[in-house]
Image 1 (cartoon, rainbow, N blue to C red):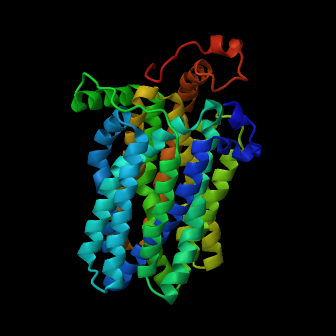
Image 2 (image 1 turned 135 degrees about the horizontal axis):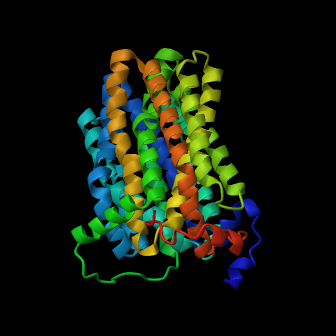
Length: 441
């Protein structure tokens, strides 16, 4: 620990003083940039060869459907197995998926069913990858006071890649075609695999459990459903995932039919949302404490919904980019704040299962949102679809605000008990005596 503290890191990036997290940051940063290259190229490829808004939704549906059914079991396994081993396995499979897609596109053999099948395959991989990766974050950080900063840096890394990836993808697609994006994504996995290989973590393999998988799954479900903060945060996130976040799947339609552009325009639109999300993550990383994050879920949920509506009615590209910037900022602060609170208050032996439900709320539920958006956009148009989605996000945030006083009352004593909040003294602890575990009401 003393060696770690000798590394001089700015306060904004203080979690990078932990060696494992630094390795994760570098490897994952490169890999995520490749992922956004592939995501952007895949959306453009589907829309180019089919011209169907509905099929854009189908591809998104295929990539996210497995998380609904598989993530809960993946969370149980994540609590049982060594998380780094799980990630080495899932990232290796992701590498091979990108290779197959690259070969199909470069050989001019790709068909829509290939894209749907490979999207389903990567969704299956991510069902195991996301809960393990999210809960592994706590094991990479030696000083638990840096957890909030680490999660904010992780969000910043994701959205920096989201900013850079689509921009590069737009240039590559316009010059040499989509295939090169898939090649670069495949190569990017080498970085994250090497980073995981270099990590030194405490082995947690093999603690056999008496309960079977279904029994442990039920324990995890009961834990989540009986915890008011965890339950309410996940419900609010689910609504935003269903009716808010899928709006990004319609970017090819806005780029082509609203702003009369091409791949470059789509890259600009997606990068604007990524830039806003990056700024939101930097803001979260600059915060010294987790105090107030529950209010951020409410406030920035309103910001996200309002900016969606502003974007949907914009016909001037620069204004639309500003609205997407604000929407990206609101979305990342809302979701990253939710993630931080969930990880901070969850019991260590159940964190993998909690994050599996987070995966369902954040990724799985948007499966149906993609289908809904694709169908609705075909019936009433993309702009009105996004307007309706923004209204529901605002309504969900207002409903969440009514739960805030009770949520704050429950989570503060948990933070005090675990030493996460040190600046709050014994007086407040006595005044907020009721909860010691997130399951207490």
